[in-house]
Image (tube, rainbow, N blue to C red):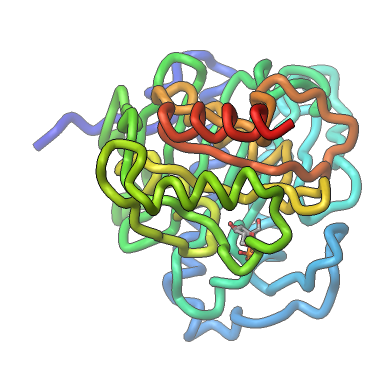
Length: 308
Ligand code: FDP
């Protein structure tokens, strides 16, 4: 049997290890809740609307409370910034150095139908309003047939699988996204609202003009799950801005996944610019988000820039 390495042992920096240990425990609790959701009256709406104007689901609220509660106990965490809270939650303590920014349960529309959902997180030293380039740790958990955490601290990407005892154990190291894949992942119902460059880019993929083979489509509608497939199989995920406005959130969706993409050899742009170079002005800011294999992301960026 392979050596048993817990995620908190894998991360060598003591502060980051304490943070990931808290996140892992919280995500193990969330995984457990999701597994038995149908028996626990936890499906459905919680009755409130979050800062994004979206109806909160009971599991959103549960996941947010568990994560915030876990981070409150970590001395080096100064602030918890969540999709579900209008403002950062500040922990008033002199030892606080890090902001942990998270989407507690991504893929809300898939919660009630037993399809993969996830938790995404990013860690910044100091203010949460910094470029993604400065993230000191980023990752996500995908709750699926296996519950898996994918993590980077800026030196490659590793994944950890949740075992029966509630520990995330190392299951893959030095993960690399294929340099090209043959899937595109996008909500095509939005195509009429995209800039023409995106429609032309997809038409080119379908004609088999990139790599001599026509691309196939895969869209789950849970960002973590669509990203996880893209990390393992290659290809490109797109949620382009429409009328200049993106849907996905920069701080707790695009930035952490962009860091993992780059650390595994892929790329991430908002169309023209690299995601990790964007300077945020609001914790809930939205962006166009294109992430995936290097070849597709570079070709898309070229198409968008060429159309200007
Ligand atoms: P959801 O609205 O279900 O919460 O972050 C939001 C998100 O899901 C992503 O997980 C997903 O990739 C995307 O939005 C799905 O959006 P569409 O339903 O517009 O395709």
